[in-house]
Image (cartoon, rainbow, N blue to C red; front, side):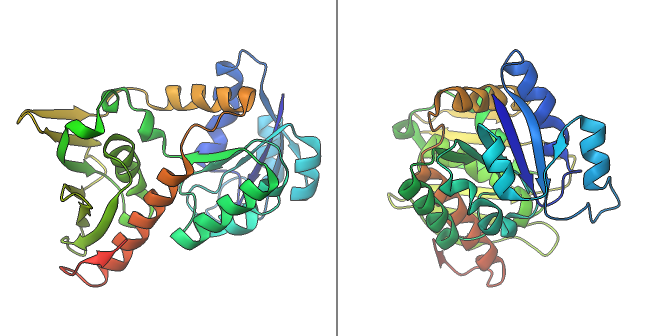
Length: 277
């Protein structure tokens, strides 16, 4: 099975890692063969031609040609989700399986628009943060969870998805409103569910490991530090998606993730005020 990679620029962490990981996880049955990039790396990295030569992947000059040549598609641009509306439009009309890298969309409105395109075209697709697959975060019943406190590194704009995605996977998508409680240096916010449960999210330095404290209704607490290799189960699920077309993350959950991130960014501009999701 031949995969085509579509990216804003190719010399970035996910594009650098996914081809080898997918080939290994599939036993060589699925391989990234083609790649398209809108621009060369703006960060001083390899040009598109240099990257393709270094990775033994054929450069393709148009998204249309990548779609025509490929059996399945990966739309990357993990650090520039504002590019996804443009980069995803034709792939999501193709009918071929499409994985869209995190963060799926910059707004709830665009997320819904992209999934509507895919559904009308019969295109199986999904998107996810790899943190959803951390071994430590598995096995919880939504009905057992009372509250969650989550810590992690990175910025609100580009890294909060790695905290919100596992939370929604564990506790459900019904977050109704968000309040920013952080500072200019360290983002923090509260999420409130429709049933009154709350989630507390905070960002710290790059040394801070992804950690979740789950308060259960039986009055016990589970402290979960994401120390497992969460990329491995993520890639195995991705390989299975390309083999079977089985969507791995419900679209409803992805829309909820994007809606919460959008609300959190809005809330950061109006601290200590509830913002509707």
